[in-house]
Image (tube, rainbow, N blue to C red):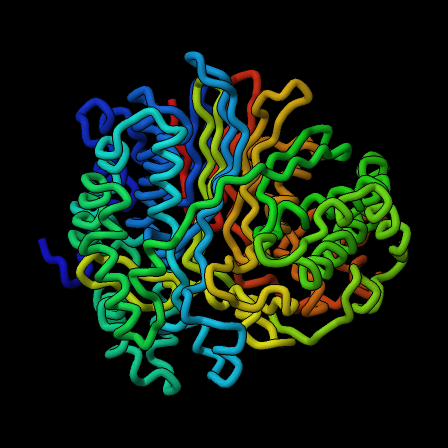
Length: 595
């Protein structure tokens, strides 16, 4: 089997499932064409690739808990979604586990977000071109995925490393086929490589160009084999964190970054620390549920809580009951704009700056924001939150992945991981077959300038040694009033993570839609700046004979012509009387697995 170029395979999903579910019985049970939504009576995994979902489900079938399954699915995503996430990146994990076998119940959040290397200060990127924090070595932050996953497994898992990593090792060694999401990500990236502005990229990022992009010829159904990453995963399975901090793996990461003019050192890897924190708890009167989600440096939980709080105070439930879809949509948009304006002003790493989470989610502040809203028209940008407007432009994200797990013991994990932009920094570690992140762009690398996602962020988010950049990732677990897991949700998609995750919850709890309907329903996005509303084609709702998008124009919302090119990809699992109703957003081609 060739390892230097992709190969064609006639079956994308079947081949992938066979890699992970390697026993004959498991292969026989695997559906030929899994749909994007299924109900499972005992346990479920929803990831944005069928092979990763199947990897987590196989671990659950062997008696593992939700953490075991999440770690297995994540390491597998590193193989099959190399343009989205991987062991060269970082992430957040929210965990809820019941009391069991004499161990107390667990409700916690694990922060393994990348950190700024020690040699990088707040002004490093100011004189450099805009590509510096996005591509090549200086874009690489200290990766946290390996440390974070091993921390979660060691503290809250029940199975051995070798067993949990086995599905990912199989996938890397035996290969996987390029699905539509991979082919699209590759096509978009190939176009950048072939741009006259990037004439040297094919040489500078040779492994990425040749292996992951097929030297510009990758297409649907091509087979990608990564024996190098299988070797990395085998080292991790055998040596744990020592493979990174004291072994060849860490040395190769630093060498790859240095060769691309980066500043990451082995000292950064050794000094990296996983941060376990109390999750953000939001008691949402609008949803009638409690949300367990990530606190800063994730902005997602605060922004979602602020949005839901403002909508509650504008009587959104009554608007739905009355069928006033334009007004309901207007309130949602205005609430998002307030939340994103406050994100721009206040959000950063709380280990370095004061982030006023309690004030932003207080009854007084939410009421104040709700009362500032004009019911008949959008306001000027400077009227939102507590920040003056800055010009910005939007961009799309392919460098993030989300997975949800609900086990048969009432445990759950919501996990979002990233390498930031599509194919991250483009810097690969050729000896071990994976790509390094470009997370430095999530810092405020140039004052008063937007990042790659069109987000303007405050000086509070400037880089500093050991600091974690601001994030939009929103891994969330929903609890009933008696504390039981009711849903698991999260998304990929840059700032669209926040709007996508929020709308799926609104669709499920306010509109009473099932998981498949909730994730597939057309969505909208507004991030305050740029002052531009995006609405997917066929966005639902009419009033007095006019579609909602037309009403938004009447309410003076500036709209981008045509549907957006990329919206968030949301994974969602919700408890029903039949078990776990699980759905993977069809926008990216995932499929849930379980039993």
